[in-house]
Amino acid sequence: MTQIYDRVALIGLGLIASSMAHAMKRAGLAGEIVGYARSAETRDIAREIGFCDQICDSATEAAQGADLIVLCVPVGAMESVAVEIAPVLKAGATVSDVGSVKRAVIDAVAKHLPEGVHFVPAHPLAGTEHSGPRSGFAELFDNRWCIIVPDLCEDETVIARLENLWRAMGSNVDRMDADHHDLVLAVTSHTPHLIAYTMVGVADDLSRVTDSEVIKYSAAGFRDFTRIAASDPTMWRDVFLNNKEATLEILGRFTEELFVLQRAIREGNGEHLHDYFTRTRSIRRSIIEAGQDTAAPNFGRTSSTKP
Amino acid sequence: MTQIYDRVALIGLGLIASSMAHAMKRAGLAGEIVGYARSAETRDIAREIGFCDQICDSATEAAQGADLIVLCVPVGAMESVAVEIAPVLKAGATVSDVGSVKRAVIDAVAKHLPEGVHFVPAHPLAGTEHSGPRSGFAELFDNRWCIIVPDLCEDETVIARLENLWRAMGSNVDRMDADHHDLVLAVTSHTPHLIAYTMVGVADDLSRVTDSEVIKYSAAGFRDFTRIAASDPTMWRDVFLNNKEATLEILGRFTEELFVLQRAIREGNGEHLHDYFTRTRSIRRSIIEAGQDTAAPNFGRTSSTKP
View 1 (cartoon, one colour):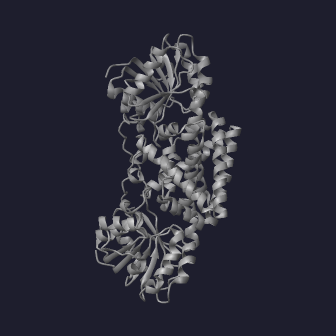
View 2: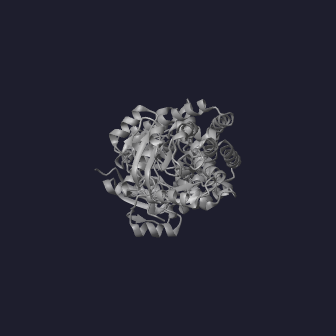
View 3: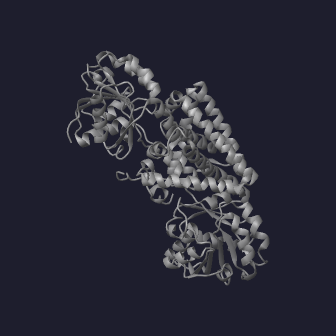
């Protein structure tokens, strides 16, 4: 594949940034990849693994001279990074990000960027429950979607170039405006995560059911929730604080629906329950047909060895 | 391994019964395995696959002369099967079941069984989102737990024999009384399933977010919920109708906790959210250490091919 950007700067070096570096190297998409992370420990690990050509000791040093600067920090940290790097950004450079929320990032970042710098937010819908520079791998984005939010950019060439990068890293690419993105993600990601966190917290709190019972008998359904409830706490705190409105709206819908099912249980309305459970079954089939999950039972988990 | 029962009768031939038959054959645990299912189509499929030595055309024919009779039908169908087979049960036989609820099954079944027949309910905590006779496999119970509920049986030899069968099919075995079982399962299985069904239903209902968006962008968290929300509707209807009290109690706890998190979001209380999300992370680790889930990212799912 051909090189798409000369110099790419990754600010923040966690799961997404390290996976981007691996994926760009796999396909030779950048002339040079430089990186920066606030924590010296993270920078050391990144140097040891070597997924960037150079790890810088400041965000400005990394951003200087870059054609593409990708903010890969938690949503709540985007603004201070933007303020820091703004003075050194080169004319014609593209700034992007990988945040899970788009309206709040646009509001926090755009106003600090100088004239002549393009801002094209993006959100790769890919991840695992692991975090940090050691958790990245080149295949993370393969066949996953990356949503590009070009609300503020009028230069089609700039947008298309960023889309090409994501495609070349393995993604499918879609465009969406910021508000619609935030609503769609509230449904497919933010509310499910909050619910999983809640369910795991409830199980942990119950004094009449011991922790060891919760753990031993988790294969009956509960363990599925613990995966997403093991995601990075800082990242998720920032998601909820910055997509408040849409998340609260979907949570309201969720609670309403839950109350209806709860009443059906209380009243012994088996027909309502059966109808509901039949309808939800077909969505699973569509997701598998769309190539967004495996058809193998239990996600294709392999049996663990005896404890 | 040595044979544990001479003749085992499986009433109902879905995922659990067919997996039991495969697991018993794998280790040679039964002299003869006979089966019965209410649907003629299921019986035909079972004959075609051949996981039983004989498929009978009635429950009484299957139960007659059996040393162990396992009721593998939805919880709501247990009583009518018990009524039907009671007259033909041989003295000294053991009746068991695999239902996800134990108090209701004991109440429905025990009163119909004749003197001299032992009733030892059991619940293997194993399954997949697939159902029916074609979905069974011998490894389903390997390293999963099977809970034995011996409340009504005073003969230790009888209980130990059934436990040996489950161990020889690959399970770890625990004992619990019926009410505690129903509470533990409300936490680790029934409430998580109801919540997953609800979340999937909400996503399907939202008119401002299309079905195709929900499906395309499901890898951001939502798809994890769709697996358990694809489970058998009849089985799950019966679970909720028959473990009403414990499920409603845990749902109440869940809603209370969700409201607290919801308020933290509304008020912008990031510290509360961060603390909560940090605590839930450690439970995942314990489940992996206990061998009850894989440590591989994303459950070890393999990347799907491009759609």
